[in-house]
Image 1: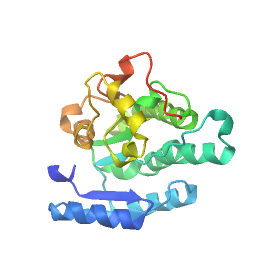
Image 2 (image 1 turned 180 degrees about the vertical axis):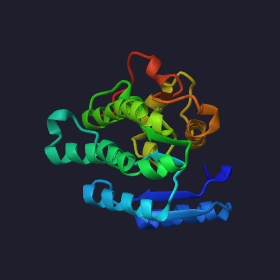
Image 3 (image 1 turned 60 degrees about the vertical axis):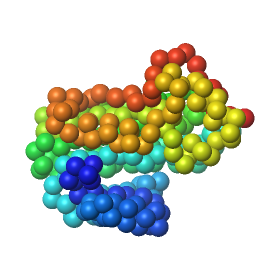
Length: 231
C-alpha cells in the first residue's frame, strides 16, 4: 500500500513491533504513523478510533488485519479465551468500522478490507472461537457493504489460507510438512501475495466490488478435508 503512495498508519499492541515496522517502511520512503492499542480492550479501541479521527480528516482505506487464534478443543476453551478471540477478531473490527465512517465517507471513494481466513470458509478441530470469529467477519462485511455503499464506501473481506509467516513456523515440523503437502499448488502463500490482494481490493480496479470475500488460499478450500492442527 505504501509503495503505491499511501500514507500508512499502523496499529499494534506492541510499541516495539510498531517501531520496527515503521523503520522498515520509512527506509523505503513510505510515510508512516504508529498507534499502540490493545484491541482486546473495548475502551482502548474506542480511544484509538477517536485518535484516528482527530489525526486524519479523511481516510481512503481501512485494513482490519489484527487477529489471534487459540488452538484448543471447544471443551477446553473457557469464557475468557472465547471472549478474547471474538473481541480482537470481530468486535474490534466492528468498532473501528463504525467509528471511522465519517473520515472514510469524507474521502468520497473509500474502501475497507477485513482480513478473514480460510478457516471462516471451512474449519478444523481446535479452532472453534477463531473460525466463528472469521466466519462472522465475512457476514459483517456483507452487512456493512449494504449499509455503507450508499455513502461511497466499499467493504470487502480477504480470506487467506496458509501463508509463510513466523506464526506458521511455530507449528511442529511434521505438521508444517503435512500442511504443505495438502496445498493444491504445492506451496504456501506469501505475504507479498496477500498484500497484492489487499491492494487490489482497496484500489480502483475493484471499484465495483463490494460485499465480497476474496479467498487467497491456493485452492485449499476446494478440498473436503485439511490436516488437523492439534497434536
